[in-house]
Length: 281
Ligand SMILES: C[S@@+](CC[C@H](N)C(=O)[O-])C[C@H]1O[C@@H](n2cnc3c(N)ncnc32)[C@H](O)[C@@H]1O
Figure 1 (spheres, rainbow, N blue to C red):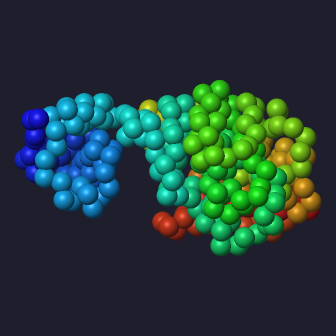
Figure 2 (figure 1 turned 120 degrees about the vertical axis):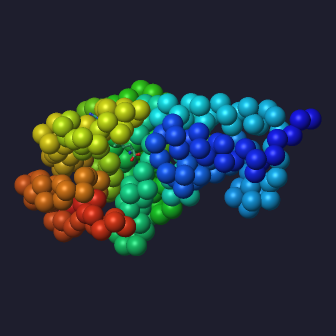
Figure 3 (figure 1 turned 135 degrees about the horizontal axis):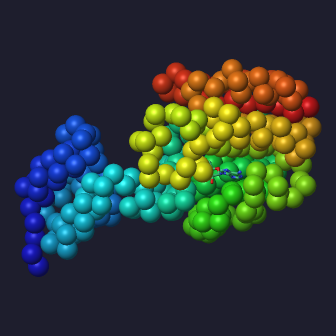
């Protein structure tokens, strides 16, 4: 078997990634680390001890680096990504789950606001990461419902449900249109909230626009969700929405307009208000 010396090829790979993606050597080295862990199917400590890889592993590594060089995110190359310590199946119709979205789970966990056997809806679920994590981490006895407007997302959600051995209802739905007339105790949503004029959209070229962009300076979907949620929430039901770092005041104003109580926003690790909750009573 032909073996390739890992330390000899590492610098070459880092330079390739850094040059093609126009990132620093440090960032490229972190990327290479992720690619190696994925390609070799080993953990960090095993990687530290690894001296050689096979020629076929080397070829796979180079193939991944060349696809990554087009700018395609690693999550779409690996077809999986981590969220709250678990690995979710990901396809290109799904938004790649973001660390800032984990704040929703942290807030729910810290407060343990509700009883356990709740009706829980993840609206615009994408991969299902939020709803599935909320059930696994906190509300083990919840009846879980997940929806998305994208058929490929709903198929992917079912794959993730199977992977985590969870029973749940999945709906193909334009927000609440096809959601059964259940009264929910908790609605969680990370809807599209980026304005179509936002210059950062270029950096998100590979991700589905439908998952990112909303009309009315990014607030149209948030408005639709809050407005309609009043018909789907139990008395004292809670809705938690992720939004842009500069949208807190507008989102609180929408919650106020529809007479929600205990409206509160929470900051992410960078100190930006990124989620807001409202209680329906
Ligand atoms: C920002 S992504 C969030 C995905 C996932 N919840 C997460 O946090 O990773 C927004 C999701 O809303 C879905 N979506 C967009 N418009 C929708 C609509 N009108 N009705 C239902 N879902 C919609 C998108 O397909 C996408 O999966």
